[in-house]
Length: 120
Image (tube, rainbow, N blue to C red; front, side, top):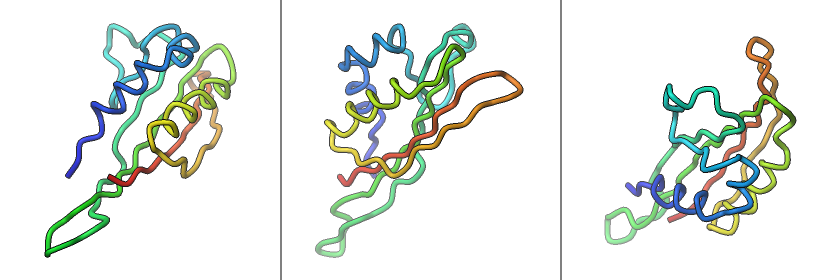
């Protein structure tokens, strides 16, 4: 099984356009630390699936890995951030599976959900 979290963090941190749109390196695996909960916009991400995708000599030779990236914004529609995230991830070899716009009525937060897959 391949752990993609370190390479995702590296790719996101290296994208200066993305960090500018976010107002800093505001991307987090699964949850946001309590001390940073009020900072927007931000991206959270987590692994959806990590399954064998290729076999040889009775052993796993590759994996299909899927991650979800959630963009959260209080001020405005996060489409510009989503476009840059897509640019960043596709340059790193990921393929976008889906994207959808949501709005959290109770917190008044714009929420863009995206999913990406990579074969490793």
